[in-house]
Image (cartoon, rainbow, N blue to C red; front, side, top):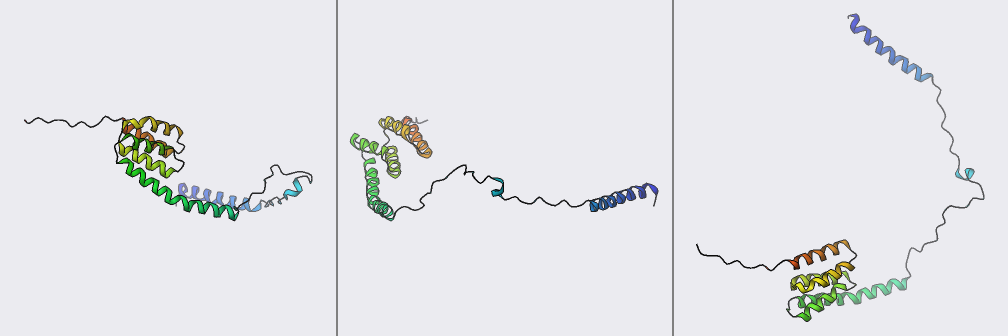
Length: 166
């Protein structure tokens, strides 16, 4: 081997050997012992934040009342949704007004059915009521649906173009 190759190899091996020997001679530092929190805090200190005790379960009577109310309202909600579907097929102003009143119902399922019925009714007279419902809506998806319905009802009616025979 030539000196040009042997010298860098020997120099690298020497550096590795010195590093290993030097790191072996360093005394290992002991880790600091964990200090208990009670030793750090004074005995008279109070907790920074006190949390009140929370009840994790509702009383059985409240649960039973809620379940009974839900059982009673399900058929009423389904009936109201069906009525809105029937009203949407009419073309009189009274039917439209009954549909528009349901846009402010507390039940979101009835509001959604009323919106569908309003779109199906396809009357621009519904736009002010839809705008009022949009101002009161809290759910983002409901706001989007109401705005889309308003935009749809603002579209001009599709006029059939007469085609001329060539």
